[in-house]
Every structure is written in structure tokens, then in C-alpha cells.
Length: 434
Image (cartoon, rainbow, N blue to C red):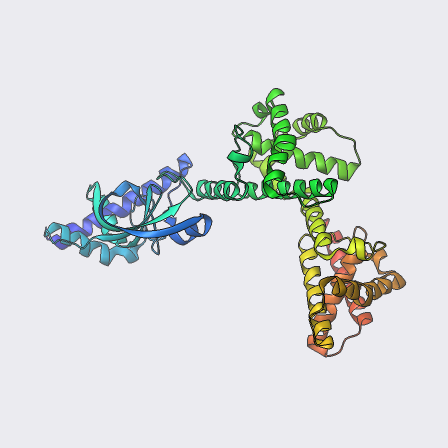
């Protein structure tokens, strides 16, 4: 048998092994994907990088690639026929004792990513090599990374690292540990701390340093609830979850009950009700419901509103004003409206206009006239559950869209168009039973 034939057989055998490995890892619920370098880099906090020279690198610690992560599986077995030609040529080089150049790798924690040499790593691993010569660039990160991690675990590690970097939690709350099991939850913890900081500032009538807010939140909010979770054995009802997971779910469940049902719930009451409502559900269904529940939007809206009011100082400038939005993200866009109005005033005046002056002018000359139109036309009656601020926003944006298409468009025309469009959409939803 020729070297070409032997190398071709090696490749077919590798493809066959890759197919079986895909089936087995799927049955075991294990990850079979190479880690994409750019995605990992985006998630992790980096301090810098440096070339650390030539090293013998264990092949089983090379678990990612810079550009070829779809061509090979986690064991660097080929997954696609397009790798055939290059793979076979490298395998032939091994048969003829041709010395191949070192591969190039990034090192992050304990794991490596291929910059150049994916096929060389694949062939070497298939031939039973334990190590490969490599030029290595090490990237420094605060996250502890091991070779058996998948993207979800890396995202959790990255979220924890950002949380610690922001809060200095071990110093602010010595002896207290926080571990979450769902991606994105550490960001929600930071939101809780921000709201607590705002609350302390309102109480003290002065800005509270961030480290004091973290310490106070830990001592007066987080720790008491975690202690209650542990004392009542709530975690036993939710296997695989942590006290920090339950803290988030319970505090937001409590907030939801109080807001939606005007109930005077204590934390203990909320815990009992939460267990009664959700403990028997499959974990996957529970997580899905909690992630999508509308009451999360209420919490986000409350925080966005507080931030908007703080930036604009509308409660002080216009005490009788009532700005209330029902869609997350609109408060930030409302602030953009004010910023544009401020620029416009500055162009007219030929000088920079103070923010508070721009806020007052926007409220009196843009926002309030449109709200009065909404009231006069009785538009709000068409949209139960929405507010005058929602209608202001939709009308002003519709007006801009109409102007782009038809030139000058009156506010009244935009209002009529909003009613027409949204009423039609509402009717469609009713017909669908939504």
C-alpha cells in the first residue's frame, strides 16, 4: 500500500471516529465543539498578552481555534471533507519523517487556541502524539480556565470575574460566597446593587460611595435572604441551583407580588409561595419561565425610570409631570430625544445649553403639547395598559418616519397613523388568541 493510500485511510478513519464521537458526546450531554477564540476573548476580562517562547504543549489542552473551530471537533478530529487534502499531506509528511514547523498557539489559563496549525494538531493527535512543539502567546486573565470547560461555563466564569472586578466583593463582604448557574445573572446582581445604592442615597440625601453600597447590600439584603434560604431548606427543592440563584429569583418574585398584586409580602411569605408555585416544575421549564417572565421587565423598567429621572432631574424641574413608559429600553431613547433637542437649542442660541434648561424646554415645548393632543383625541382609550408617554414616543417616531417618506408630516397625521397601525396589530393578536 502506498503512503498516499495509507494517509487516505487514516483520514477516513478519523472522519468515522468524529461521527461516532458526535453521537456519544450528544448522548452524554457533553460538549463536542472547539472553542471559538474570538468569542471567548470577548467574554473574558483580559489584562494583556505576551510571547512566552517555544514550548512542548500537551495536545489534550488545545481545545479551541482562531478560525477553524467549525472544521474540527473538540478532539481535533476532522468534521468536513474540505479538510481532506491538507490533512492527508501532513499525514504523509509523518510517514516520510519530514519535520514540520511548530504550530502557533494562544494560551489562556490552562487551555490553548490554534492560531496556525489546526491540521498539524489534528494529525498529531490522531497519530497518538501527546505533545506538540508550539510558539506560544499567553493572554493574562483573572478567570480560572480549565480544559473541560464549555462556552456556558466560560461565560459564567467571565461574568463572575466582571462582578468581582466591579464590586471587590471578597473585600466588601468577607466570608460570603456567590455562585450563579445561569449566564447573565451576575449582571442582574450588579443591577440590584445599583438600585440599593440609589435607595441609600435617597435615604441619606447624598451620593453613596460604591464600595459602601456593595457592603450594605451584602449585609442587609443578600446575606439575610441567603440565610433564610438555607434555614428553610429551599435549595433541596431546586437541585443543581445555588443560594445565589434562589436569592435572585425570590427577591424579584417578592417584588413582582408586591407590585402586581399590592400584597404585603414578607421574604418568608414569598419563599413559601415561590416553592408552592414552582418547586414541582421541571428545572428547564422553571428556568424558561423565570427568564421570560414579564415581571422581569417591570424590574428593568423601574431601574431605567430611576436612572432617567436622576439624569434629567424632571421631578424637581417639573413636579407635576408624570412620565411613565411600559417598554424596556425606551427611557434611554427618550433621553436621546432630549439630547437632540439640547443640540437644536444650542444651534439656535449659538452656545452650549445646560442640560436642565434643555430638559425643561423639551418637556414644555415638545413632550407636553403632544401629550395634550393624546388627551384631546382620546387616543389612550384605544390602548389599555399603555401610557401617555408610550403614545408620545410612538407618535414622535412615526412622525419622523412619515417625514422621511412624504416630507412635512403633522403631529396629528402621525397620531392617526399610530392609532391605525397599533389598533390593527391589537386586533390581529385578539384573532390569534394572544
